[in-house]
Amino acid sequence: MTSFGLATAAFDGAAPVAAIVIGNRIAPLAGGASLLAILDDWDAALPAIEAAASDPALLEKAVPLSSVRLEAPYRPRQVFCTGANYKKHVIGLIMGDPSMRGPDDDAATDEERYARATRMMDDRAKNALPYVFLKLPSCVVGPQDDVILPRNVQKPDWELELGVVIGKPTRHVAAADAMSHVAGYVVVNDVTAREHVFRRDGSAIGADWLSGKCFPTFLPFGPMIVPRRFVADPYDLTISLSVNGKLYQNETTADMMQGIEQQIAYLSDRVELLPGDLICTGSPYGNGSAFGVFLQPGDLMEGTITGLGMQRNRCVAES
Image (cartoon, rainbow, N blue to C red; front, side):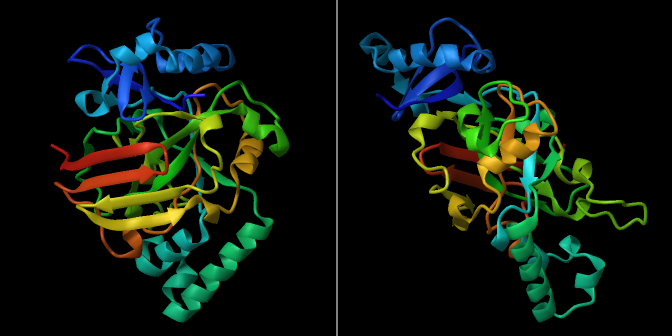
């Protein structure tokens, strides 16, 4: 079977349409349905798309991927983000960025902070449920769009992650059955305003995810959704992100503490997951906070995950 990805692309300046990506070429899908509409009927639509991927007539219409503009695949109805899901990532944040520390960490030495963070993450890996917050669908932009750096954010940071796309309504599913509810995988970048995650104004009762995560353009999404069957092992993918050509993130999904199955089971016990819903499964080590480096106007983020394509997002100042 020919492997493929599904994207939304503008051909020759026309309105964006659902498209199929085969290797380094892309062609519009017949029928005119949006990618979200296709996901709404995923089990029925997939066999026809698989047949199209091997159709010589469609392949003749394919053009170089570099010749089209790739948009966000679609606007998800719901976006869920699993936080603190890579041990090295959280330790790096606590060690590198004072705004990510609690009061006990502020008063500790570096050695004490490192030991406390390591114990906390070891305990989470053994005993904790997934820790999930919401991100607004209005944050979504495409894999080639600008990321706007808000004027009231001093520490904008990147978090390249493996995204999981749900392929059918999902409620109270067991972890053992969860993968059958996955349509595919995609690259996401959970851009974060670090200094706004933990408020210091005395009124905070927990992490402020609205202020830390939900600015417009803070979720580059795409370039394509790769169906689950073409990703042999989602725990053997390399997540890499560079800024202006300097590599910062270069880790694997093997370090994920709460697996995709556990995340879906946890979520489906609390909400109904809908076709096209997006789960951002956590970011590995290498965020700017770990190095004291934050995004600036003019920066170019380039992020890729094995077999899922590349994002190229330029950072611009809010006008």
